[in-house]
Image 1 (cartoon, rainbow, N blue to C red):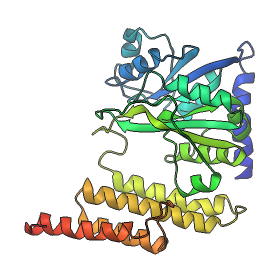
Image 2 (cartoon, rainbow, N blue to C red; image 1 turned 30 degrees about the horizontal axis):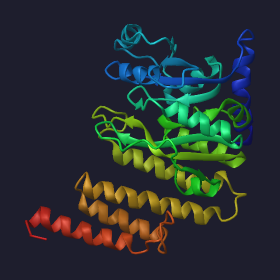
Image 3 (cartoon, rainbow, N blue to C red; image 1 turned 180 degrees about the vertical axis):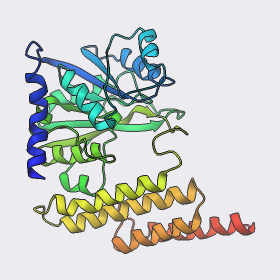
Length: 332
């Protein structure tokens, strides 16, 4: 594992060395947009970057082998960008790494082809990053595509997360993140061997060497697509996420209290899944089981430190009542 990370840490430098004529631009933001058969959506993503109030930026679109008309949509958009088609399908991690290697900005921002940004996203984030050189990566709140955003607060609270807090739960949504190129040079890029949580794993590495944070205001929208990568396969995605969370104790054995932090993280994930199973999927027995797993992993206070130890027991009551109402028509 140590050798893998050493190789990853050298990868960005290797790509840049291969193109010696490229100059890095202080203050510039390189926006990396990986895409795979997202012709229906990528136009909105590009336009959301084009209207940013922060204008020192470049856009790098990495097409990961699309078979639709993504190329034509990008060309018709009128948004200046670099468009590159991968010779083979690499997955999100490989596509993002390719884009980073082709970019020239001091800051790297990530946007998925089916998501979009608010117009002042980059301006607010770059101002915060410039104000604190210790801050290596900065995200924001994301809202569903059809949600009406609350008033964006230009003085929004910047919440910093320690490595321990990031172990318990990932707080950074990738389409919201801006990070420093030199920080990536130190810790390496996305792990291309991972097919889930590759972004979370990178944020963990960054949080070990410096500060990561989130602006507590909505600066991005995400689509809940019926044809998305995890659509109809949420159970498998959750199982893979739990498998990665369990691996953190072995990945970071030198961290004091790592097993406790991992148990809190497993508990938090089970509880969030229980809410989803009950409120969205209406699978009440599975929701009860997930809630019980959450309590078993961390039976004391709320796993995310919210100070509400009875929250999960109230959820049990809610699940039972919803199940009775759905199955028996009992008025509750």
